[in-house]
Length: 337
Ligand code: SF4
Image 1 (tube, protein in one colour):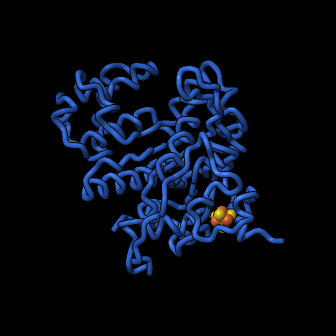
Image 2 (cartoon, rainbow, N blue to C red; image 1 turned 45 degrees about the vertical axis):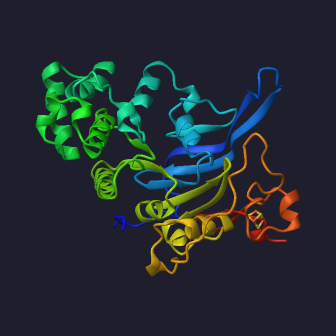
C-alpha cells in the first residue's frame, strides 16, 4: 500500500539528536467576541521528544492535535511560551546573525499545497533561483548548474524550467517545492501534510522520493500527517498527538501492532487505509469531535472519546509512562500504582 523503509529503525536507541524538544508549550491569548475577556488557548502542552540524525519521525493526529504548530515552532514561525527547542545541542532562540541564517538553510519545510509555495508569476527556474539569491550563494552560471542537478534529483526534466507552476501537475509542482527545499542542502526537512493533496499514485511517488532523498543525503525528516497507516509505513518512529498533548511515542513496529494508547488504537480502527493483513480490517469511526483547545476536558484530554475512560480519567492528568526504552504512553491504564 505505502512504501516501506528498508533501513533499520533507530528507535530503541537514544542515538544522536539533531533537534530536541524539551517540555514545549504554546498558549495563545484569544478573545471570543469583541468584548470577550482574553482566554488561554493551549495549542501545545508539555511536549518533549528528540529527532535523531538520519531518521524519519512521524507525527500523527487529527486536525487540531497540534502537529502543524510543532512544525511552525521548529521553523521559528511561532515562539514557544514554555520549554525550549535545541538544534545541535543549542537553543534555537539563541541563534543570531550569520548563525541564524545558517540555521534557516539547515531546516526546510514542505507544505501541503504546492500552489501556496510557488509564485504563479515566476517561472520554475526563477522559483528555484530564489533560495540561492536570498542566501547569496553562487554565480548565475553556478546556480543554473545546481538547479539542473536538483531537477535530476527530484526526477523532473529540464524543460520545466521555463514553465509556470500552473502548467505543471500537482505531483510535478510538489517535486519543484522539494527541489527548492533541498537547494541549500538542509539537514532537517519538515514535511507538513506534504502528500495530503495528491492523488494516491502520485502520493506514493512523492513518498518514495522523500525516502530516497533521506537515504541519499542522510536527511532527518519530520513527516506530519493525519494518516496513521501511511506514517507507520514510512517512518522509523511515530509520535501520536491529541489536543496538543503527546499521547504515545513508539517505534514503527509497535505502532504496526496497533500501539498501546486507546487513541492510537482508535486511530487505527477509524482509518480507511488500515491494512486488513495486519488484522485491523474492522473499521470504526472515532466517536465525537476533538474538543476545543479553548475549553479542553479536565483530567485526560481524551476522556470524552475514550472507550476505556473511567471516573479517574475525568479528574487526573495522566503521566507519561515508559513501557520500553523507545516506547511511552500517556494513559492512566499504564501507570504503575
Ligand atoms: Fe482513556 Fe483514561 Fe487512558 Fe485517557 S487516561 S486514554 S481516558 S483510559
